[in-house]
Image (tube, rainbow, N blue to C red; front, side, top):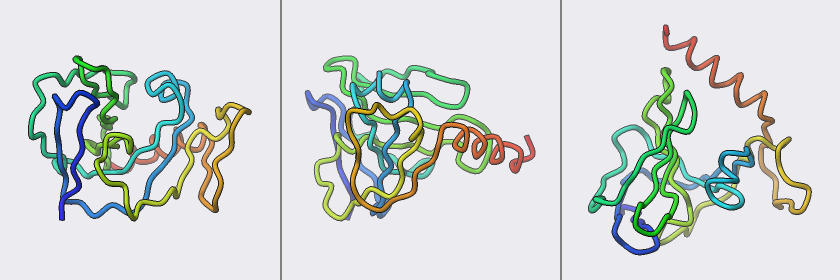
Length: 147
C-alpha cells in the first residue's frame, strides 16, 4: 500500500510505494533553519517519489550535495534530495510531517548529533552520528562511485 503525503495547503501531493519503517532526525544548522526545529525524514529511493500535483514545488540547492523542495504557496518543507554522485544519488528524504500516516515508522538515526541544541533530547535506542562522521560517509560514498 502506498504512503501518501502533502504540503499544508494541499497544493502539493505525492506518494511512494517503498515500504518505510525507519526515520532519521537531523540536527544540522541547515535542517534546523529549514524546518524550524528537527528535520525528521524517511528515505525514498531515486525515482520512488511520485508527484500527483506539484505546480507549487520549488527547489533550493542548499549545498553541493543536496537540494530542498518546498511548497511556494504555503512554505511547507517537503523533502531533501541528495544530488551528490554516488550510490545514493537521487535519494529523497521526505519530511515525516508531510506524510498522511506515519504508522509503523520508528526513529533509528540522529544525524549531526554534535549540532543538536541543548534544549531537547530524543528518547529511545538509536544510532547517533556526528557531522564529521556524516560528511565522511558522503565522501566515502562519492569515492566508491568512481567519481
